Length: 404
Ligand SMILES: Cc1cc2nc3c(=O)[nH]c(=O)nc-3n(C[C@H](O)[C@H](O)[C@H](O)COP(=O)(O)OP(=O)(O)OC[C@H]3O[C@@H](n4cnc5c(N)ncnc54)[C@H](O)[C@@H]3O)c2cc1C
Image (cartoon, rainbow, N blue to C red; front, side):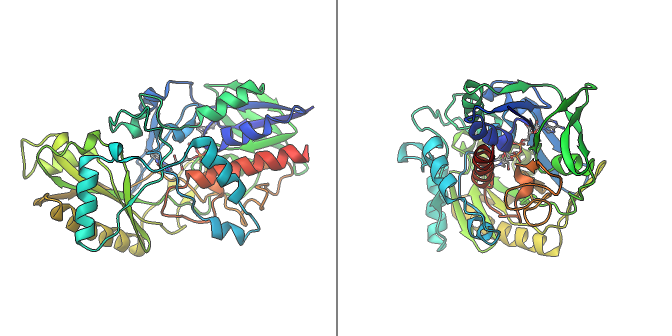
């Protein structure tokens, strides 16, 4: 029997667990920092890092950030990964089936989404339907995707956990891994904040792009020298009775070179819009998210995360904001009220990159120490990364299962 520890019961960790637990010669223990919770309460576990110029967001609980996704599933970096001899096409196909990825039917399109599509088209811009991991039969169109789906309509990693549990994995919650143990360049186990040591033949670190590099550093791996986040802003304006906050978030998108523009609401816009419309409520906002792929210039050190935007990132965001503003005004928004949120990042990636910190089987230079989360992505896609993170992690689970 081989002992395997997975650090983090999030998107990547549970995806590996699901595949690897099919092998009955393997004993899997997952150690998770956060608690178990209903998907609808996931918003209570947001952990926002706002100690530099950009706010970085994730959720720390069983299921990880998968619980608060907008449900967008676009295959990204597929061709780039082939340069590292990694073909995730079979796993993408597998996931499409398992998750039920599809675009939403007309009944779930949303009034403002329709309006934005029409306005975009009048400006010569092609606004497409976003592929979603949302079951329209269960979706009540409450707009709460990023809070945690209250109706079980949106796919999340708890589905992977369910299968892994049926296959006998053990899950430890409310215990954080604080260091790895290696001897003679071979992994031996992990140490936790409860003073425990857990020994294993294989350790898979899946604590997310902002934590995994710190853990790798405890055994001398120089991770976190790069870090990307796909920065985004939400640009919005006043439109009486828009009620966009009750529509499926990011249901449509425009893909331009290096820029994605997508329907999205943010309560952060309200105080800014109230400067010109004091009576405005959250229901009177029409808005679009602008997201761009950033450089790799961030760092994740032991006690510090550094992530800013450079001239190129800023100019792309400005270009996207100008286009978004035009669409919003064409759709009927009041131009005087046009506002933007501050810059945020929700794709915490590329801090233990393939070809740099891990090889094409996601193994580090320490034998039997693997990584399975957003940190392995080689670059910022500027697009939803979860489909690719899940595929890479399923691939690792299958690889280890065959190997063992
Ligand atoms: C609001 C929001 C909306 C998003 N929408 C989309 C979308 O629609 N489509 C898309 O593709 N992407 C989306 N993303 C991004 C996507 O959710 C993430 O890229 C992806 O879930 C990251 O997976 P991961 O495995 O790297 O990390 P996570 O899923 O965050 O997993 C990390 C896990 O490790 C645990 N952990 C952390 N530290 C420790 C420790 N020391 N010891 C033990 N456990 C630890 C955490 O609690 C967590 O469970 C969104 C993100 C956010 C925040």
